[in-house]
Length: 324
Ligand SMILES: C[C@H](CCC(=O)NCCS(=O)(=O)O)[C@H]1CC[C@H]2[C@@H]3CC[C@@H]4C[C@H](O)CC[C@]4(C)[C@H]3C[C@H](O)[C@]12C
Image (cartoon, rainbow, N blue to C red; front, side, top):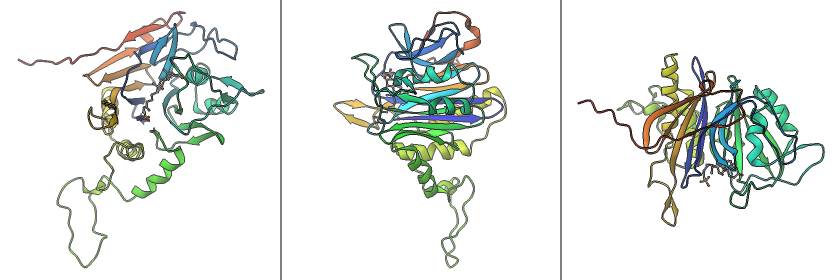
């Protein structure tokens, strides 16, 4: 399972938790403007917008899990098993393999509206990167400073939904999650009032009771509600550090601790990494399960006019600041 979120303070932030039982050797990768993107069925892009994000680099090709471009448009792929459907090649459409989808959109588009138009004419085809890396069943969130959309290719066709919560998790399809939020509209960050009965004197005995009933389990449906509640009630102080700090706290609301989500076969799903991209500054911050310190990569401190990838292996291991 996974969760992706957007958050706006003075700067705009976009990031995700990657919850999984295995690692793909991912790292922070900057694709500069002149690194050619070759597509399987579309013309190669010799120059394009620069990207920063988390990717597995296989045979020199960055396979992005989530990324942001130099104009702040961001996109993340999350598991969508049993629902994602990639079809055959279609004439008159752009035929794109799922692993090409993030660069396809982020290399060209600067806003959600541009992305919506491009994606409407894009057909995702059932094409594996390789035998070892078959096409994975994903859905995507695409965000700019102002808004977010969710993109789902299913057997019934392509759907593009507005995502006013700016949150995405996994199954079921997106309309369920928005509908499900209505079950929780009574929840609040404030002090609850007794609407149960005028005849009984009921008073809150603890802080935080306004959100009683907010789900805390690790299912995708519950994580959507928990993350949306946390994000939509979030406050921060308008500084770059404050916004980024709050963003990591939002992501922490649905962290998966090792041992709590058993998959069988001695395998457990856990939050492998959490990312927070300051999309205005082009800085990609991340934390890993084993390294609670925030590490950052600034795309503008790499040569964005180059034609070679800049790769930053994840910094692992705890970095404890001893005070005595
Ligand atoms: C599994 C991850 C989603 C995390 C998640 O939601 N986990 C819940 C599991 S569950 O919901 O509990 O079952 C997704 C997110 C992005 C994906 C990569 C995208 C590029 C590339 C695309 C190629 O086509 C196949 C290989 C490739 C490296 C992909 C591998 C894998 O698929 C990645 C890591």
